[in-house]
Amino acid sequence: MGKTKKLIELDNKAIEILEKQAKLQKRSLKNYLEYTLENTAMRYSEPSEAYKAMIDDMIERDEKGLLKTYSFDQVLKEYGRKL
Image 1 (tube, one colour):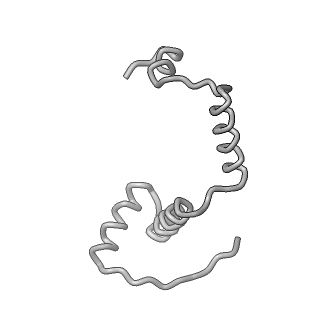
Image 2: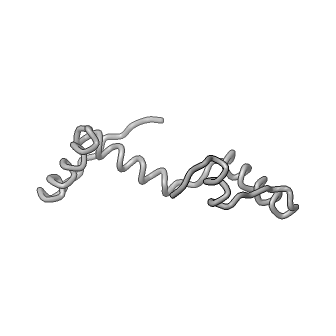
Image 3: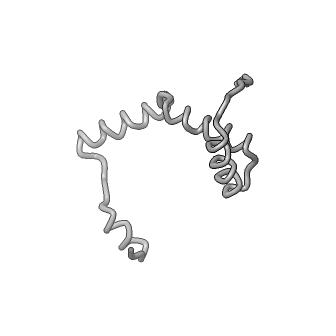
């Protein structure tokens, strides 16, 4: 995937806030902005074909009664965990 440079303008207060967040994640401001924007873009993107096929398979197995599910409490009990 290629990369494109874009110039953005933000007010000083926004930059100050974003710099603090970047430092908390031990990132440069540039890296933090790139990471945040790319992560946000991925949340808006359409799921991959492999993911759609997996979900369709899960739905089909559930409709046929072949999908075994466990409650959260059952999973905690199985692994000896408590909240």
